[in-house]
Length: 338
Image 1 (cartoon, rainbow, N blue to C red):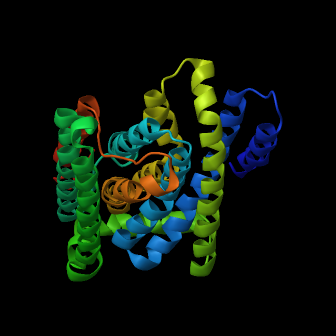
Image 2: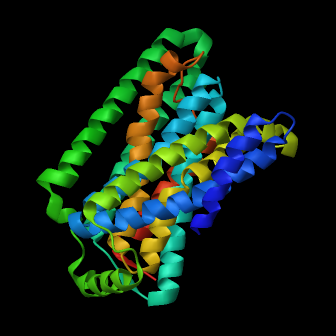
C-alpha cells in the first residue's frame, strides 16, 4: 500500500498548476492519506505493545486527530466556519459509528465473539455523553437568543464552555492514566486471545523498535497534516464542481479523510482481535475531538480567522450526535462484540 504515497507529490504538483480541476487535487491528496494512516496503525501497534491498550489508544487518537485539527485551523483561517462545525460532527460520527461499527463487524466475522474491558467502554460512553450535553448548552443559547441580541453573552458562554471542556479532558486523562489505570487494563478474559493476536502480528507485521515506531508516528502525522492543507485548499472548489454544500463537504469528505488514520487503526485492531485497543482508539478519538479539538478551536477562532468559531450546532447535528452517543454506549457497554 505504500506505493500510494506517490499521490502526495502528485497532489502538490497538481495544486501548483493553474487550470487543474480541484476534484483531481482533492482525490490525489485523499488517496495519499491512506498509506499514511497505515503507517500510523503500525507505529501505534508497536507502541501499544509496550504501553498497554489505554495509552496506546490515547496515542493513536492524538496522532490520528492531528489532521482534523490542522484541517479545522486552515479552514478557520479561510473563514469556513460552517464547514469546520460540520467536520467536527462528521469526525465524531465517523469514529463512533463507522470506525467502531466496522471493527465490531469485521472482527466478529473473523473471530465470532470478542471480549474487551466493559469498565473502560462505560467510562468512554459517559465522557462522550457529558461532552455532547455540554456542547448542546451553547448551541441552544445561540438558537433561541441569536447572535444579534446576545452576541457578547454568547461569546462569553462559548469561551466558558470551552474552558470547562478542556478542564474535563485534563481530569479524564488523570483518571485514565494515573488514578484508575486498572479500569482501562486489557480484559482478563480476552488476554489469551490478545496475546495470540500479538504473536501473530509479530510474525507478519513490522519488527520495529520503540524509537522507530515513535519516529514513524511523528513523521506520518506531519505528512497527514501537510496533505490536510492541500485538501482544504481544494475542498471548496471541489464542492462547487460536484454540487456539494459546505456542510456536506465538512460532514462527509473532510471528516472521513481527516479521520482515516484512527478509523483504519480501530478497524485493523478489531480484525486482529485487540478489541480493547480498538475501542480505546475509536471512542478515545471521539472524546478527544469533543473535549479538546472543539474547545481549542473556540479559543483560537477569533485569533486565526476572520470570525470566531462558536459552538452553535444545528438541531440536526446535535440530534445526530446525541442519538449516536446513546447507541454507541448501549452497544459497547457490555464488553462483548460479535
